[in-house]
Image 1 (tube, rainbow, N blue to C red):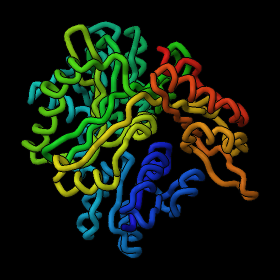
Image 2 (spheres, rainbow, N blue to C red):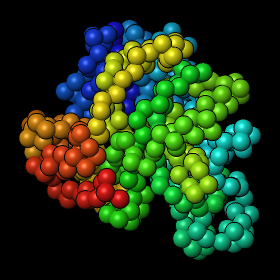
Image 3 (cartoon, one colour):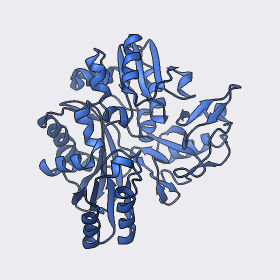
Image 4 (cartoon, rainbow, N blue to C red):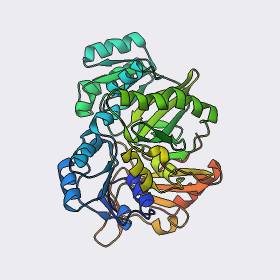
Length: 418
């Protein structure tokens, strides 16, 4: 099969790495890809959110299957367009991807189908939102309704901080149209856990749990990022909690989307908080998370291409999905200053040595004129290692990352330890 993966970050590198192991995949392409992906697949210079150009290229080059990884092209309807062109694809259609593209929609869905989540209100009027913040007090959570690269959520410790977040989104347009509507919700407490699940519209198969580390600095301090590292499985996610999540959250969500005429095929991301009252949904995503994917797919012991095909065909319940014992840790090496201001274009050294003991997934990299690998983004690399225990996996990831160096390199020193 000729397979195209849409995207160009660490998540897509992990997907390409796993697909390259499938006997079903004879030719692998990625658009736009990055310097690491280029070692596994032929990279195609098309922006991930250019639906028209992507579909035209896939058709002209006779792709047998397309995997759409990022949120933007899913929300824009790339899967719908591929299917209309007769090309099988992995990922939700536009009307199902809205579960991530609109937080207001997802909150209304949870309310309607009694799926546990935080109390909330939705606002399109800034003055009303500010008055609600004043009335509710702090801590409180302010979320941009639309897609915001994982940065559109502010956990405000004070009323003034929450009001500033509302103004930044609704008045100053920090997230463009994504912040024109905001969701304001109660601040839940407890450990956060991510569970990714393969879905075929009716059935779902959960992957091992994981835990992302969103804050930029050690001790969960600093601004939210796209993710500074991830571990899998989460030590907080017990079999008892898993059973409760399946009954109260996972199956009801898939059934709710189907009942609404929005059957979900692809990867459904459940961002959970294990509150004193039980597990509740923090957010849904309509795709693989990043960097959780790098950790979780490292534990997959089955053919990923076969799973993708079954999700698209509605036969996931017949899939053979196996997972390795042990644990995985993905450590993100970022550009200094990320997620605010940072410089890129710096040479990276130590990649070959690091790759001897871990998978080094490229997120923001490009090839230089002399063949060297250069930094090309905020999150640059995801060094991912396995271990028999979580402690061993974490230790192995840090040890593998030790030889890697580039100017202003920044990483957290407490991934998997907080």
